[in-house]
Each structure stands twice: as C-alpha cells, then as structure tokens.
Length: 202
Image (cartoon, rainbow, N blue to C red):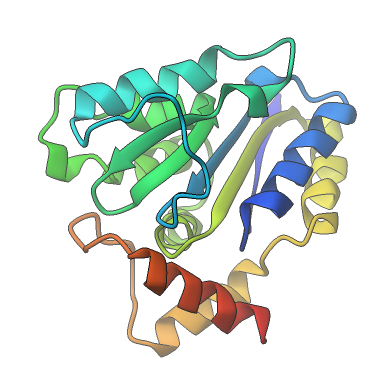
C-alpha cells in the first residue's frame, strides 16, 4: 500500500530542497510532485503557456514525464491557471490537476488541484488550504510513498521548513477566508510578496 505525504512551503527553495531530500532517500522522481507560485516571475522558461486548459495539460505533462537524469526538478514546466495564477510545476499531481480540466472551460481549471489532492487521499479541508497556499505564493510538494516509508518522508518534509498547516489555515480564516475559490483573482507579485513577508515575521 502507498500513502500520499504532502507539505506546503513559503518559498520554492525550501520545497525544492525537500524534493531533493526525498529523491536522495529513495523516492522515485515519478512519485513526487511540486507546484510553485510564479507570480513574481522567479522562473522563466523558454516557452510561455497561455491560460488555455489545453496548454495547461501540455505543460504539466512535461514535468510528469521526467523521472530519470536530473530528477524531478529538471522537468519544471510553466503554467497559467485561473485561480492559482502563474505556476511552475512538475510531476504526477500537476499532470493530474491540469489533465482533469483539459478541454474544459478555462475558469474551471484551478479546481483541478483540490480534486486531484483529495483523490490522492488528502483530506478535502487540507486540500483547500494547500491550494490557497499556492495561490498566495507558496510551494506544494507531494509524494506517493510505501506505507513503511511514510513517517520518514513526512519527517523529510518537516525538516525542510514546511508550513504548519493548522496554524496557516487559522491565519487564513482570521482574514475571513473559508475555502479555496477557483473564481477568485490570482495574487499579483506584490500581493505574493506581502503574503510571504507576513509569515516570515511570525
């Protein structure tokens, strides 16, 4: 049996370090995913994707195909998804989330992340917080691991400065947030920076 372990990070560097640590521990790149906010354009790719669902599916597939030389992070692809805004992603979760909306109305695209997380075994309440975290500038790392490795994998994520999900959800709710809304406007680069600064000082 396998278990899905998931963590959110306030910056891409911490999430990427967690991905590398999981790979070093023996988790195959094909079983790991990373989805990071790119509102401030920290990652520039050779190809720019449009907001069309077809392009989202194609872009995520690039990361999903990576599994060997260079590891998961070598396959980062750029996507623009309403509700989440511009993101950089690689791996099975990105492919599943984008693939779920291929050919769908563009406005429904972002809902694919919450659905993909819950389908992978993440509680729906947590999935909403994770999606909102990406929207606000965070990075999400998810891995499918054997039950026997779940505790070690979760410890790896925590060692790399993952967010305390309970505290973060409470902070979101203090400002009136209740759940991820795929029709909400994406955060701007300035809003993402303010959000990151807010939690760095806590």
